[in-house]
Length: 185
Image (cartoon, rainbow, N blue to C red; front, side, top):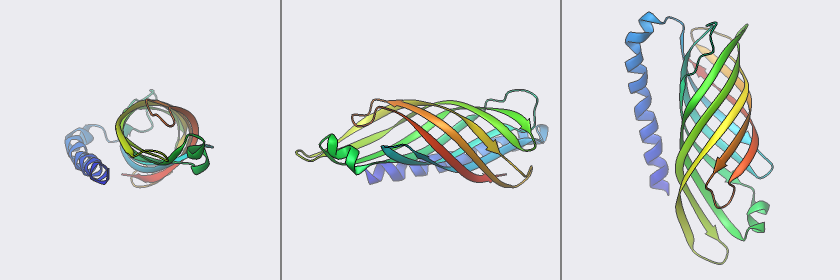
């Protein structure tokens, strides 16, 4: 499972420079292009998840903009929730992709509406049996607000509500609340 985690990190972060490099020529035409790398923390009564995300979009446009988002995340499920399901431990890692739409509200604020999918691995260790690792696939929908105070370089902060569905044997649907922070460039 550790090798899968490192493989996904390396894959995601090797794609980011290629994406930024390929946008270099396009950025000369689109001066208002915004690139972001953010860290998101999502909480629910049964779990906490964290992810690193990369996205880009045209800022301060009058149209609803739909950029592509890439992310890597992991989920920690509450111990008491696991005990009820006769489970000792769960490790979940996923590589996400999707579309996050943004509507500029003014003053650095953006309304966000997103739809995405994920693939990954879920490793379940039951109290009575051995560890079992399986392929994980799922989807999510989110809405929230994003604040980008500085146009060229700086920090971003956002709040959102996220709904998730997956083929997980432990937690296959949920609604959580997220906060994210990061850098725009």
